Amino acid sequence: MTERIIPASQQAMYDNFHFAPGVKTGNLLLMSGQVGSDASGKCPEDFTEQFRLAFQHIEAILTEAGGDLSNIVELTSYHIGMREHLREFIAVKDEMISEPYPAWTAIGCTELAMPGAVVELSLIHISEPTRPERIA
Image 1 (cartoon, rainbow, N blue to C red):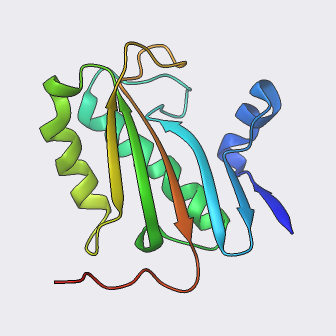
Image 2 (cartoon, rainbow, N blue to C red):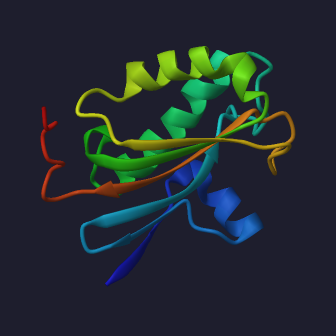
């Protein structure tokens, strides 16, 4: 059974732009790209704040789906000006996601759909079984 995951905070995005923030099928959750927008729908100029907000949007979708940040298996990040803010992004990512880390791909791009956005995050999450421990 496939379920659309739409936190109340993202219902307007679903209604206006016709995409689900998350789609869950079995134990697999696929997430649409999330930008670091605030409650007004705008992206703050502070990059670090944008990064935190993007991860908070991810967390809201995972919570709505009954999950959390611990079972992310793949993270993809799209960056405008990646070289200028990658260190700051990694610092926020590491605050939010702990070991064992998921697979991660960072992609530099020229623009994102949301004006002012410098990062967009999408991911794959598995609710059960848990991610395997790190292999040494």
